[in-house]
Length: 150
Image 1 (cartoon, one colour):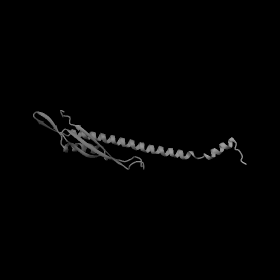
Image 2 (tube, rainbow, N blue to C red):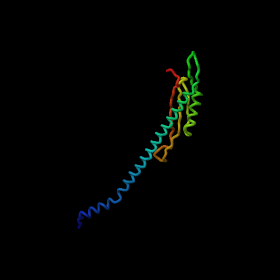
Image 3 (cartoon, helix red, strand yellow):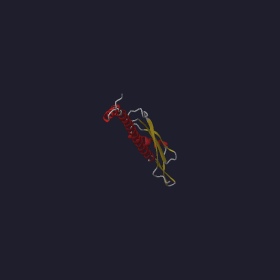
Image 4 (spheres, helix red, strand yellow):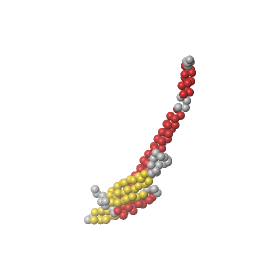
């Protein structure tokens, strides 16, 4: 013969069967939250590092475009950039700004526009299997001489 369980006994039975089942769910959410924090921190770090080297590239290009040689031709002042002048000016700015930023190229193609490219190696601020060990970030900026008529 089987005995029928009362309502209280059924509730206790169900409660015993469900004991501890919330722990895996909580652990899963905690791991998800940690992963989200790690990825968000890394994305913010990449963004800030890229903005930093964008600013350095812009400053180096501006300095490079100010490294012109001024000559007078047919009664008019002509500002002329050379690759060496652009490189020297840009290298001075990059060298003074950060140890980990490298001047990749500094040149002029038309004698009035300085084109500067810098790069740096980014590494995640938190060590994680979710992220790459490091990536190379680059930035390119251009600047024209102030005496250009165009």
